[in-house]
Amino acid sequence: MSFVIYTHYHPDHIGGNEPLARRDVLIFAHDNLRVRALERLRTPRRGGRFSPQPAAGARPVVTFDSAVSFHFNGEDVRAFLAPAAHTDGDAFVHFPDSDVLHLGDVFRTTSYPIVDVYNGGTVAGTIKALEAAVAMAGPDTRVIPGHGLEVVGRDALVGFLDMTVDIRDRVQALIAEGRTLEEVMAVRPTAAYDAQWGQEATWTANDFVPIVFYELGGGSLFVR
Image (cartoon, rainbow, N blue to C red; front, side, top):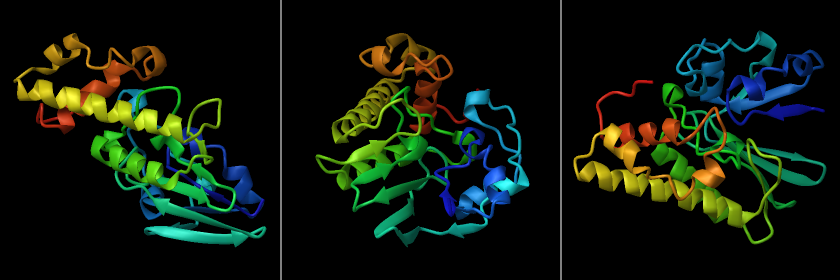
């Protein structure tokens, strides 16, 4: 192994990579990820509590602004920023010759989108990033999620995008009616999707909907 590309900074993705660095494996990431990796950060899945700081050896040593390309094994590989989506340092990794697209935690098959509002994530950015991924994916593209047991195709990605947009639109309509967060939650704007995306105990509609609500102007401060 010569190098590793980080898709985002969360400890479950980068925390165990210090042994690789000791073997002179180069670690690449977006500029913002290195900034985050030098801090002790709050994360939404820990209820806003601080997460452990990554070991020094797990921090990226090469960073990029918008995109970086690699050329090896006769193939081009491109990593590029997905701005303000899951976090503010997400990277997609595209293997055009193999028709493979890795989306990190911007795309998951196990839950609703996790939007890390503590570290620059936004619902709008998540939707924009998913739209870009759908535009890149073809009928035979293999899409790798950040969490999930299967490599999926474009249709699954489109379904995840459509679900996210629909929930955003439903919450926006309820805000326009003057509904409070409690009233929005009572309406259950995710009801049509809970069976598929609401079963992960650590991230359900009760976590996702308030983030959508506050981002759309339903409140002045995100509190969890």
